[in-house]
Image (cartoon, rainbow, N blue to C red; front, side, top):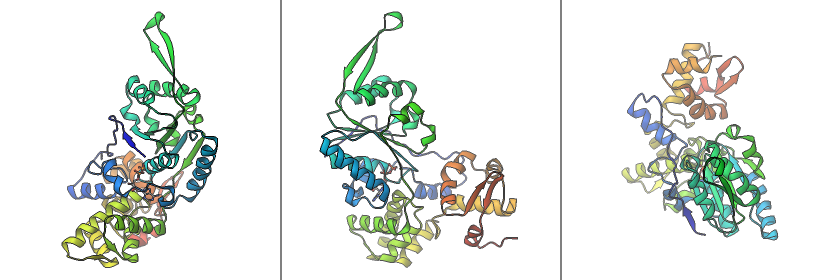
Length: 357
Ligand code: ADP
């Protein structure tokens, strides 16, 4: 399979809004589920699974896509348009590339912020070959013009181009080859309903379990030719916030540490030592996660407390807390959201070694 990359490809990491220290920034880069500048999509290619069988976890998703692939092959048609949603780093781009490989077609990768002008999207659509996959990341950020060009393309394989302006403007329709649009988003609720309705399949990606992440760490270690024990891989998995991208990144940092320590095997002690140095704690919490939890405990008696109050007390941006930190804290049951505000749970008290008064 040829992986074509659009020149407009644009995956930028989320910028933090209120950096408070260099140490904190370094930690965030390590635990951020967004792709970083150093980790371009192509640098992930070596470790990215290429076949559905190598794609670990997400059993439901794989089952559904396996059926869709088999049916499309029998009908000799492209796959239905597919919308994948879920937090960053869970494998949406990877799945799109695997689908292309399984269907024996090309996958063009782009992101909505790179499709500002009408010609950006028309250029991509016109260049598609029959059956190709067009992957649009952050699809909830498409502008209206781009969206309206996509509707007839998705529905009728047709590109409607307006020529001229004002009353003399004419619409010219250009036929397109049948293709599959794979849209990826972290915010499915922000998609307009006409766009959402045009996807035949809408699938959610979930955070990964520890045993799945352990397999991912072991697989990546084998590709990087690093020797790792089962418990060493498990230690990295436990600290990876349910996210393969973070698991792979932590493995690389532990590998650096092992090299400096002249150790040829990564075992549990070495992995824990390395990640403690990088300030990634036993549950994958960083400085800001712990700050958020301890602020709610110490200043608000464990909650309930509103997001804005937490933001003011920690000096963090409310949106960043909500979108970057909270999802994982909610996922591991350290924080609850109630209609009266956020509440820290007993498990979080125990993790931080604090006593509930
Ligand atoms: P997203 O598009 O959701 O942000 P990616 O598809 O870019 O995430 O995945 C990030 C990295 O995590 C990839 O480089 C890939 O190596 C790894 N990865 C993601 N999902 C899986 C999986 N199911 N099995 C193995 N590795 C995975």
